[in-house]
Length: 252
Ligand code: SAM
Image (spheres, rainbow, N blue to C red):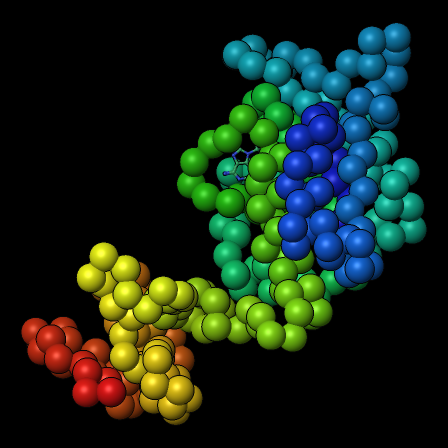
């Protein structure tokens, strides 16, 4: 996948793209990220990229021409064929489903706003989609762009390697993920659940499934309505709702 990022602050991307899985994904050819400085597409001696808003009010607005020029010149004939995403708190909320959909594209473009945001005509001329990473306001679209790049990249087949599939992750199944433990088996009197040491993969899978449902019930009950659950699992939740504390896998 190729991702073109349009920003006034290219250096912000250095750390996150140069470490760990994102770095390896680029080295192995799964991911190509091209960072474009919007200022390079601004005209005039001072290459101005922002101006005060028409109609008054505080803050600065990112000018339309440098952004449109940058996107058109980089995307060329691909403009209109691929998603051009504006990061904005006014966009639709980013989640695992949106990440999965974006991971299916060969190419994406991300536009990072700054200051009070971009001139509205950017939306009309080049933007096809708007994404918010949450109901709060950041100083710029660079961190949101990195969030999108990270979440999408780990879903590209092959990036995580065969033994680490993202299918069990929180939200991938419609549930939060079950708890994890690693060595040592006991620390300060806290023991790893026996079932995980049993070597019985059937029991472990049942325990993990129930723990995922339990955790979702406790922390994000809103997710359960649309989670893919069996009739027995829904009956188990009804018993928890009724105050029963024991669990199906307690004896395991
Ligand atoms: N005045 C804008 C508004 O109220 O919608 C907010 C501008 S914000 C200070 C500057 C830039 O940060 C935005 O243009 C956008 O690119 C980015 N940004 C801030 N919060 C964001 C969020 N929750 N999700 C995605 N991008 C965000």
